[in-house]
Length: 427
Image (cartoon, rainbow, N blue to C red):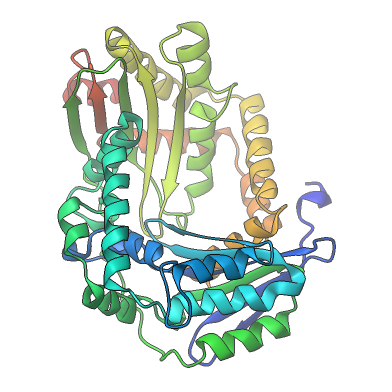
């Protein structure tokens, strides 16, 4: 293992008395600073009547506070050349800003303001609900987006972890200031929050600001969300479209599972690049799809493996058969060169993500929320390097023992039944 793979910058970590964690990396060669607050709360932490609330709260963070209008929030950041953003996922919500190092105080003040003092003005709330309803409609009109929502809902039927992040028109319209504030009081608690900063930053300055901005937040116990339980099944949406979009899935692993890295490598060898088996057989050899890929989505307590492709209605049956054949074959004959190549690609992906301050703060925040510590690159690389062909083949065999999830939209008359697909996985 080459040493350039494991060289790390120093991460300074301080935990405030109320449980909020501050983590920084000073990068002397970088003139900018990227800062963010990650909250260990996402769509899976919502109750049924709160479906879509995490995403709405993320939007409302920029719509005004007790001290700033929506316009002033944007101006305060952009007047110093910065930018600000936010994102919601199944398990996290993040609020980030990037500025010059000399303007860290501005970014911190804005982030603190939107997280602590958001006004949730009734008129702004009505406008943002309208925006999200348009976003929802856009997904409904985009088959290759809609099918992945259907895929998750089918794989984890009736569970928060499987629900689409946007919510439904009914739940979105129902939200009010009271709903929002009750959710924030329950979920946005210091022990589930990490303030991370990287680039031209000073740890002591960030800690002092964190104490001033967030130190008064009361400590509270973490509410554990409902465990994800894979169900599998099928969802078929017949529509008059030019192309059929199909996703085939199986129960995956949590990122805390010892078999996670072997499963990830199996997914990559199967459909992770231009040299992958599915790309070569489906796209290059048979011309059955413009693109096809496999993926492994890990969560804190469960996971989901899948293969997604788009094809003509007339090719659906053949595409399915070829995909199942490739999956079975990969469990028996993964080669040494495939292992070498996939390990190298995994390392490049890992290290590329650490080449920017934004990538570094995301890693820090996610790892601290998930593990309570920083997992260094060399630790990950050692686990990857320890895997051999037998480990990855076995990971594939375990995957194929699970009951499948099938989601498809478009001209899908030729898609085999769930029973036939299950039999095709078993060989």
